[in-house]
Image (cartoon, rainbow, N blue to C red; front, side):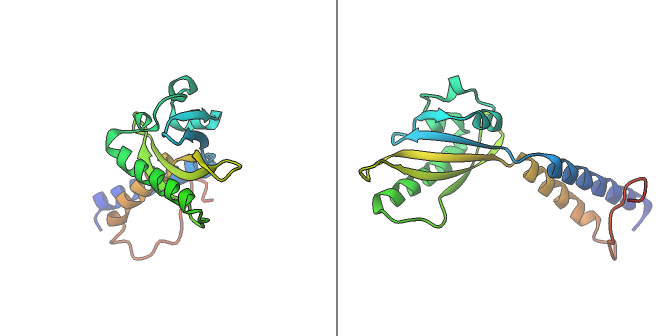
Length: 165
């Protein structure tokens, strides 16, 4: 490994360490939405606004697909259909349907969808938990960037800061 490759590897490792530190100190951002059976937002919490960047006044009474990028609407629609099928079949689910769909601003969210059933057992809508996965995706991209640069390094024992800790 020549000096240029070593410098590139050190920079990549530094980027990965910084991203990991940001991820470790950052809270997991979660939000919750309630949707009608027609896939219209009827309620959302403050966490959802923080995660999605979409204000409650914009989201309430909006069709859920208007909140995500058009190319991700089909994936979200499939998860909603799967949750509705789950409710109509009256099966319990160990794993609720999930979808990755980005907001109109491009922020990546993972949606976990649960059917909502009223007291008489009738399907009335959906509950959705949305999680911002921006930090996770950034860390994965930085680790992928570092991987080829570290191919020539025989062993990696650890990473230390300027104080050696």
